[in-house]
Image 1: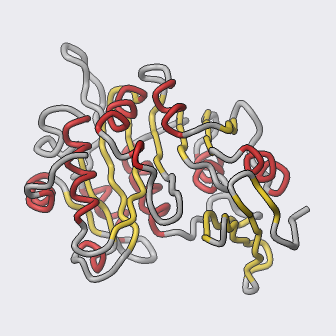
Image 2: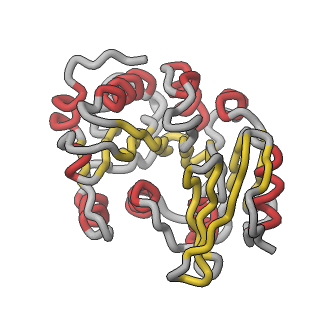
Length: 275
């Protein structure tokens, strides 16, 4: 049963707010900030634009069951979606708030283990503890207030994500920024180092957002995507982040999104210094 009042959790408070226009849809708020939006009758429904963009990358660049690590569990909206779309997937969602992890299992119809495991842990610790090459997708969607904890935006954290991914694996980052987008430029410069020489030139690094955000007109969420190269002497299918299939999916979203890769991305990053 869903709570009707605010509920105390380890890091503050949580609240489940019904959507008055849709009887089966709710917003999970953590400390007064919208964390997740779920359609309790349709796990494939994604309301947040950045999640739609991440889902478009996964749909265009991967096939079959996923091994996914979600840093920042919340209501597990993306994990529910991918579990429904990709039967046989095995996912782990990590959240620092142990009480919240327990509550979302009670409140929402989440896939059971081993399809979806929930873990109460600090995201950076879970990332560095991941067995090398154990995931196809790693999602970073962690915020303390309006900012990502500093330990998760470093080159060390990005390298740990790359280490946790299989060849061709995807690292998807939810980055919130405001004009002139200095933070996202530095995050991209950091990923360019962590994911190996030529990540930008080889179009294994991309930036995705609504055009108004990319042009620096307003605050918003941007998605960073990076793919792991093949180890020396080995072959692997590397997702084509610059391919027409992904660009079409992004243009077809309810709010069309733009993707920057290659030379366009290099110009966007400019002289930004990595973290």
